[in-house]
Image 1 (cartoon, rainbow, N blue to C red):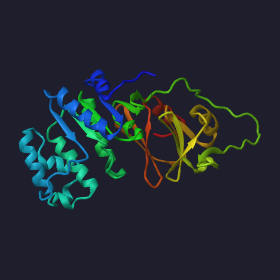
Image 2 (image 1 turned 135 degrees about the horizontal axis):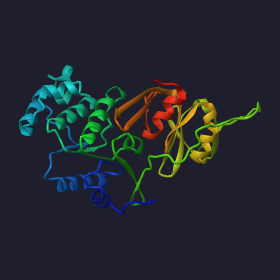
Image 3 (image 1 turned 90 degrees about the vertical axis):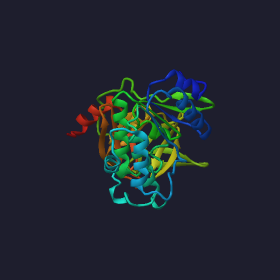
Image 4 (image 1 turned 135 degrees about the vertical axis):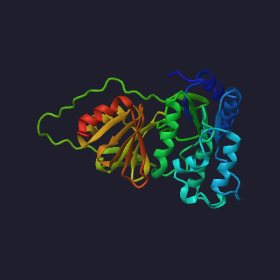
Length: 306
């Protein structure tokens, strides 16, 4: 598998492209410094987890300050409206929830009409209710020819972003494949034989056998497969190809090279940009699962979704 020996090599080779990297704190700091240097001649906007603003400022006064610095065409009121901050516009930053602080940071970045955006774990504090706003904004920047670089998020979130996702493993940065290879379009089950299947997973020294109806999705992370059951991830030894073959008859769909989803648990299908799709599940966390562009149409046709 192709990869890079350092985050500097990755960002240097992929300069100008949108990339999203599951990595540790030290790598995030190195990536931020490199982006500062490499893109110094372009309009840049940064959002780090340490960015908390000025506690005594209100949302409106804080954004007005950065509007004067940016000198762009986006007004503070437009940014406030776009990121649904009108109800807290007069609230001091120190009184905001973590999600509201995150949205203020996205609003601040939007004032600069950035060509390059760098975010550390951009969805960390964003709930499903506002996740669409953030992902759509980032997608629009990428589609307009801009560069979006995110670091520090889990691979599942990185895969939702516009561009290519990478993960850190033993000091190397490896690409997360996003396209499915050849997948059989039709699965037939002959006869009336009873076929019982349980998803075998590990919990300590025990083997758990889950009814497929209990499983929300299967994901592959860093060469290990996991079954998500009631918000917990359990290691699974079967390959995704083997699981796909067994689980399709239970209403599961291979929505991405790294994901198999229980379609009964899908509450919403979203399209953020022309090439960016997302499935929101009906679990307690309203989990987001990436839907590969090449699989979106097949899913729509297979399940009769308009």
